[in-house]
Each structure stands twice: as C-alpha cells, then as structure tokens.
Image 1 (cartoon, rainbow, N blue to C red):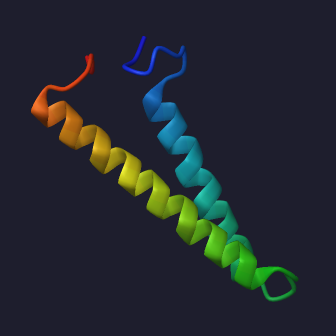
Image 2 (image 1 turned 45 degrees about the vertical axis):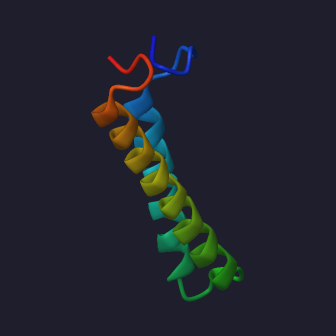
Image 3 (image 1 turned 60 degrees about the vertical axis):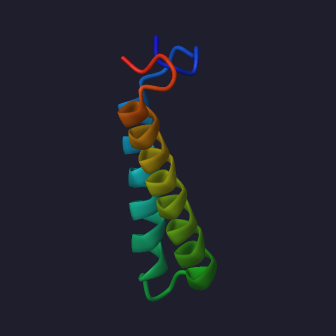
Length: 69
C-alpha cells in the first residue's frame, strides 16, 4: 500500500500520465491533426501536474511526513 491508502502503484501512475502527455504532444505536431493547439496545451498541463505531484511527494518524503515507504 502507498501513502494514499489506495491499491495502485505510484510509479505506474506517473509513467502512465507521462506517456499520455507524450502521446498528446506527438499528436499536436502531426500536420493534419485538427486539435493541435488543444492537444499541445493539454500535454503541457498534464506534464506540469505530474511534475508538481512528484515534487510534492519528494518534499513530503524528505520531511518525513506521512507513511511514505
């Protein structure tokens, strides 16, 4: 179990979100993709959320807050 009390693996969640952001970004550079601007913004937003979440987790881990094992 992780610190959230849910049964998912934190690293897999982060990897899946980064893969989604990468796929959206690659779709945004495709020449015939209709929603290029929206896909680019969504990929940047997802990536920023993942980075913020990881940084928060690292700070909490470094401070010893919660049950991060």
